[in-house]
Length: 153
Image (cartoon, rainbow, N blue to C red; front, side):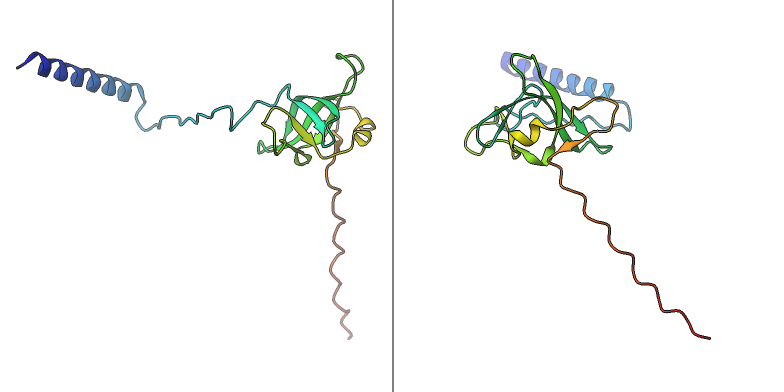
């Protein structure tokens, strides 16, 4: 057997041994955990991201996200107003009213709400009911169906 063939055979044996070790490390009947790799162009972390109005006015930064039982986002908690961290307050902004700018990258969020409306928003306090600004008003309850006419004897 040539030196080149010996090296190729050794490489194949090492690969086979590694594959066998990996299979042995996975418990029988379990599946490997899947993973997704994204680059910076397709995904960004939200915490600390600046929030602006559609007019470019600074509103603050995202400091938390409120989700429902299914993990779907309901609101972003924005550290609103103030200067250099003084005079800020946390407010909840409806998730559906936030979006990334169309022309720029994903380095900020745009809130489709006027600054004055957010200035008057109630303060977000953990473990208390959350008032989410920009949430659509609940639709009125449907009237009950008409009752059938009374039977006459």
